[in-house]
Image (cartoon, rainbow, N blue to C red; front, side, top):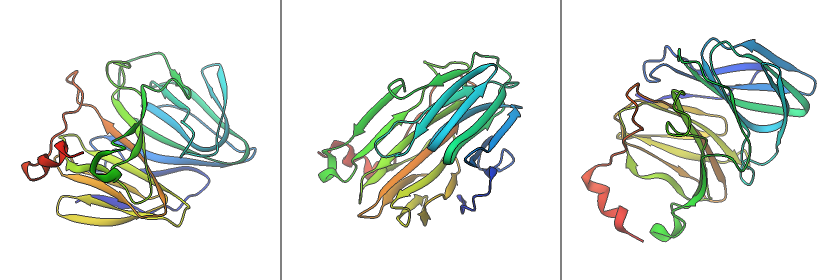
Length: 256
């Protein structure tokens, strides 16, 4: 339970979780890696979300072009592009190296592509800065939700853990599976992913697929910043995700 994919980046599209994975609930996740002058283009066969993790790129879709750059995922917000099936996508690395996280899932609904630039994400906050001696301090960035983008089937965002801190603690669960993609700064950093009664060490570039209904939380080693991009497919019921935790840890929710 809880599949872990180690990072072996190749040029082009790197698929880490497939729609056929029984733990993914029909989501695919991966990273598109390009070097200066290289491009990746295709016509989307599903709903897609692209999130610039690092680098400089020109994003083109259906006659539109946007130049985006992001050098530091700790301090800088991402550029996110959400597109429906049948969108003509072109990603050009304008200089250096670029890594673009992507997620996709089946969605027959047609909607207008959405470009979300820094400053326009649904929410950005420093969460739980003072709770439990500051051990839960993290940056939380939500790209959009069903209220703001009702035609999408994806719910995605980023968490940046401060050194030595936890995310998603106390451990929580929900019916929907969840994909976590990890980065660390400096890159030799690491953390631990807790799921159910097990735990695994996670390193820069790892991807974890956590089954639905399983308690989970994350810890980052002292001295290192940790990054998680989460991906979930929403149920086709018009409701957002319901988060729950066990009675054992509910008392911590009241601790300052």
